[in-house]
Image 1 (cartoon, one colour):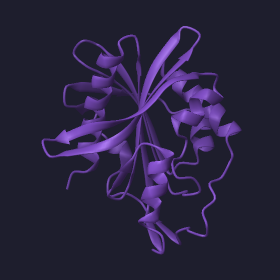
Image 2 (cartoon, one colour):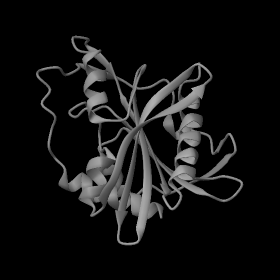
Image 3 (cartoon, helix red, strand yellow):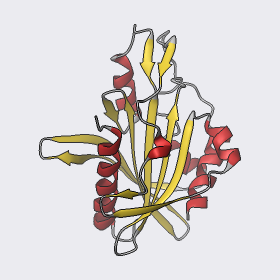
Image 4 (tube, one colour):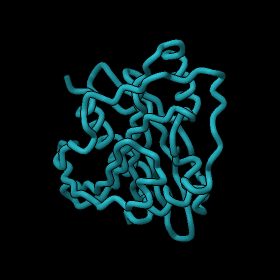
Length: 207
């Protein structure tokens, strides 16, 4: 199943080369996050993960500074695929967004909405939740990006986040977190995706 995600990203990386018009707003320097995404724990809350070998062609095509592939399972053996990447390139507001990657690999977009990831009792962050179908495969994908203290799940959100850094010589790197689950039961799938996404976000935001 994870090879499916790798294939989707690889196809899209080769076919989607449209650059975002930046209006002259480009950083002189990009600051890497304080954490190393490769140190993301294999145990997060009730989830236990395992590494998936990153396809070398995919890594080269992604143009990412860092990338990881994992599969996490809960106690009922539900599997959620995780792809994470750190980008120094700010040529587009949301690098390799699934709304482009999946259709480029032959998937039909069935639903696209914004959801809140509950972090604690007083905080939530925005993410994109998309449902796709190809032949008999019906999948649900959650994606969010972080740039410093800005979090977004759409191209529009990325454009807004970028404006906060215009005129600054150094911008934070763009961190992408994408999770995929089967969508036989969309409500249960959404609950799993937002739960694991919250665990990942809390780890990345720790002091």
